Length: 269
Image (cartoon, rainbow, N blue to C red; front, side):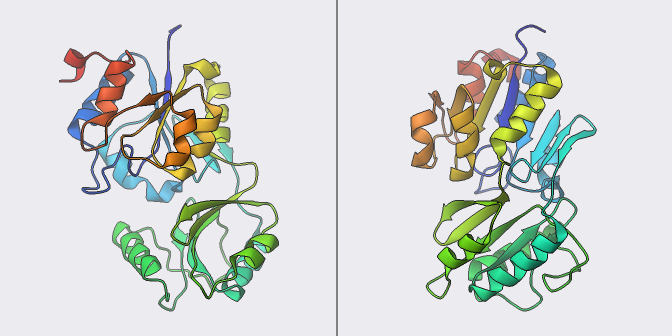
């Protein structure tokens, strides 16, 4: 298929409504039709693979780009995999606590948190969510029998973020706002994940369309030529957006696919 496109979707605030936790029916139908038209659908998420079950239950995709590019799955094949070296991960855990931060360690199979309650309310809400999904490991932060791909951290006025990040050699830090940070192995991003997929399917960059709303989508927006930003989005994406669609709840995905000529309106109604 000479005009085949590869469509890459962020999860929260792009495919999933952050109000309902669901993919709107209009988006599901549009994605199904896009695939039937020969296009490829990929989830491109900061979440690691274990934390994508709710997406997999709602929509079938051609692959999953997980953990900001640390794991790339095309069809049923893992075409790229990286995790933080074991000793480096142990040292990082010590440094995070020493500098007064807390968070979740994200692996492909499970997520890991401290045994004791966090002083950060947001981390306790995250713990509840991970437990409800069954992806919080029985092993904790204090155990050293696992590896992880990335981490998501919380900070406050008692935290020394500058000191921590100066110690985190080989990691890229994404400021998610309000004292939260996403820490990813250097050289990995949603953009590098896209490149792995394009190489695997022998597609040009012009065939890639990216859809996102938040600051951790910046790398793929800087990289791609066709960038669709949701109606509610972080302003850091504005300089790179080639199309502004509606919000998730206003059928933004279906609207964008119609306007870009990937599906027609009558096809997914």
